[in-house]
Length: 278
Image 1 (tube, rainbow, N blue to C red):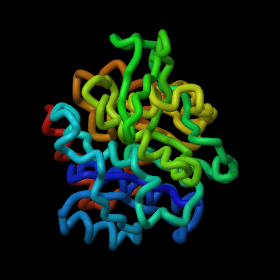
Image 2 (cartoon, rainbow, N blue to C red):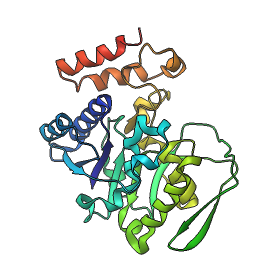
Image 3 (tube, rainbow, N blue to C red):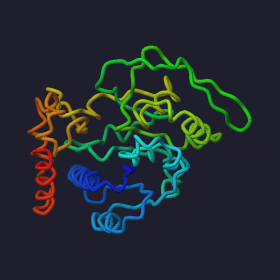
Image 4 (cartoon, helix red, strand yellow):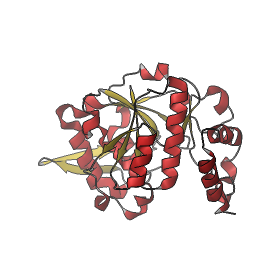
């Protein structure tokens, strides 16, 4: 099964991606198939992906930047995951494993690669339930009107690690139906792409065990986690006061393990980002 990442022009996400792929291949071999979806024009970024032997899929999204609120543009690459079923380089793939770039693979994924959810599967988000201000969201598609009721309260699944059944999403144009919902409701969401997936697919999302999406601040992350998700503080956020409460338990040991995949030049780059906060 291919492992798929999405990226934008933020150089910090590029470094996260490089370590994610290196750690995956440390578990499953240098030929582990990885694909990166990219909608930009940065030549240096594309050359880096080529050096890392990561298949580049340049894609022009239907949910283009002009349709996404400006406050989400800082992480705009994450919206690309909503359109994986339309990416030509994945046209022959029935199932893919999607991961955010801020993941770190510390144990094999064989058991995960055998799963085949009806639509998609994700682990629960590491947050408390929240309440959406709208009781329902509506949208139109091909001349028909649809209403999506909002659950109350909302227990969300984390889109940081997701198994997508692409063949199911392509069937009967479900993906275009979903993207119509996204375009018409993106202004009402609170948690970027994750909200859109949770709101539209709701109970059709199957739950993955927490081991496949474990934040480093969990006390058992080192023992129980197979995929570590730097949810919250990233590996360079050692001084940022905002993340103080989450730099606990396994954050620093896992950060050190993550840093072992850096070259000396990349390590210097990371240390520079750390000093920016002071």
